[in-house]
Length: 319
Image (cartoon, rainbow, N blue to C red; front, top):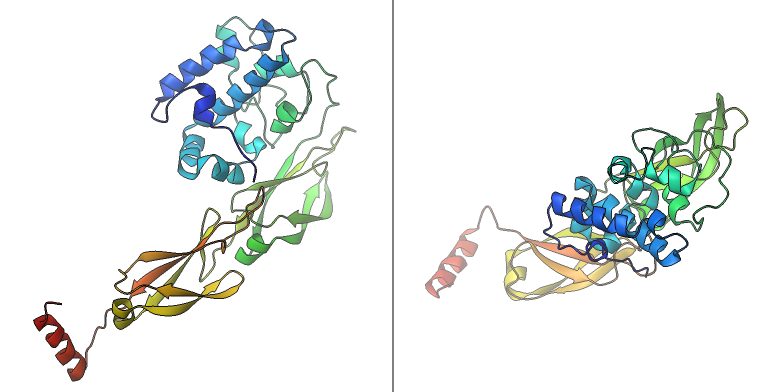
């Protein structure tokens, strides 16, 4: 399974750090490892990249909330590198420090691919933007710039719950450069609703430019039985009061079929029982989540005379 560095550790702040504190330490570290202050230092260059990635998440209220909720691995299952840097713009910060008024990443990384509708630095549309593949894809400082690209396109794609679990292929049609285009998109297993897929070279070409990319946002439809929580699956199962008191074995649906699970005597309603490894395959890396069975204890609304008598006898026994 892929491992990810802790953004809080990269910046050296605690999880309770305020927005102001995070911005302050980011500014300090970014200036310390800025390429202009460390010419030719590859170690400082990599540190600078990591610092910016950490701040792109922790400096954004919504992304930070997602990161705190799902943890590093869960966050990266939901956010691509393009998503992380979408709208990230610290040009003014570096301008104030005397590094020039233009977008800092434009100045450092050269005239790379334009942001268009896809991800990119400089989210205010002030010039060339950079998808995360430009920053982290191995193209170092000062290397030859790419040719101008056409505009990126974006679209939503609705898929079934089980298609997201198992993976599938979908044929999509859209208009590009005034003509209808049809392509087949491979949906990896384990993809979650809201995640984006980049189809390279399927955007607009424009005036003889290199084609932009197509970004497909996957929208996963809800299931009538299963509920997804990260890579875990939650299913509810009702049992009788007598089964809750005495214990039982129940059969429950899973995303691959059915499974039996033992219910211990005295279980409380809404207790979750775990089925290890019966969840969704991780979108990145190996392994999969778990399934959880939420046990709901049925309380009879009406009792027969015999049932009422038995309950009264139980009451006499201190039940």
